[in-house]
Length: 304
Image 1 (cartoon, rainbow, N blue to C red):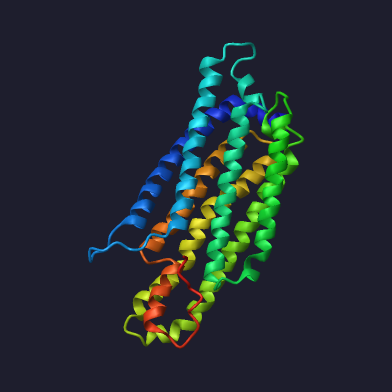
Image 2 (cartoon, rainbow, N blue to C red):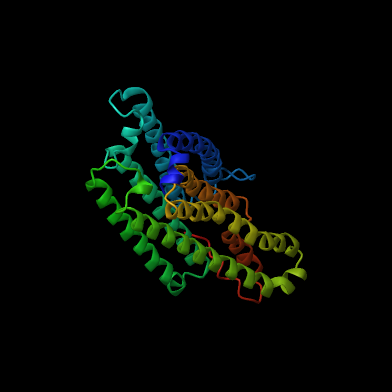
């Protein structure tokens, strides 16, 4: 543990983390702008589609948390490298584990992940015809992740020691548990979505091949798996890397978690953008309501 962090001290880790989060926040800003435009845009016929307010609220929440956190990150670095003039140098402000900046940035990280996972489970529930049994286990895991986050926040508020997060023994098990559970929620929910879409795509192939509009819809169904997997993997992969850096007690966890926070919002924005373009799972309901194929495609309910 000492060797790892000696090669990548916390001061360097925080500077690199600020740069990486600033870049990812820039991407988040672009995807959020397109996402909002997609939700509020008018059609080619000149009328405005009904706004999906739950998706809008989630997108705004994720972007707001990402904005606040990158601002806190910048301010934390300013305090350490500019304003702090006491003994020990810039490392001291970063290692004040119970400092309000460290506490609040941990809170933003957990909030972003919890909201993102809730949105993913909601989408899985909708695609599976609102069957609660499908997401019962992910919900239990999600509640477990919230419990881990709460315990972590209690400890980080009361430790009052000078150490980094990877070296804080009381924090390690709870952060590791949170990342593990979050990774499981993402993998299970994404897997259920992909399985459901793939199953219906295979069942409906014969119908679409005989339908005049089948070509376009079949292309949409064929691409949905790739769309969902790619979007979910952005955040899921960052959670997996966060878990690895936590297990090996590396200061690189600051870099990964900062980027992960922004990726949660980016992944959600990409899904909304693709729904707006008519190439995501929810959009298929529009076709099924007009075509009424003789097979069960009714699980593709539009999220209300």
